Length: 156
Image (cartoon, rainbow, N blue to C red; front, side, top):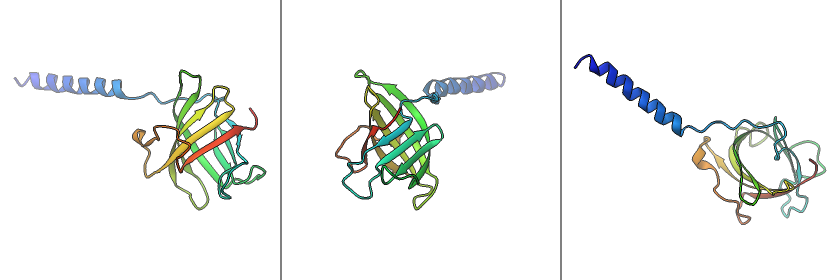
């Protein structure tokens, strides 16, 4: 019986590692030319404190109050968690990030992005989080949401 215990213990550990590995999601590795990257503008914002320009690059995301501004109001680190294409050809992203400076320095957020098939319209909904979690992403794009944003590609 004593000889079997180490074997059974090792077997239990092996099965738990296999089960964990089967459930673990591979980390998405962004390409240097992701559809999301570029300058996005919405200068028709109703509220004066809305972001009118967003510049997304492999290094992060910068947001500007006015489309003509050259100094960002928000400088953000961001990582793509997941990416997929739906049956209509839209590209979806789940992205998480942290504000690097300003009044909201350290604020963590998670966003669900939808880029049109032509990658000329970018919509997203975001949520502020205490810690990043796969379960904390918004589940749909809803223009009625408080944290909904829409932008149009300025350049590609």
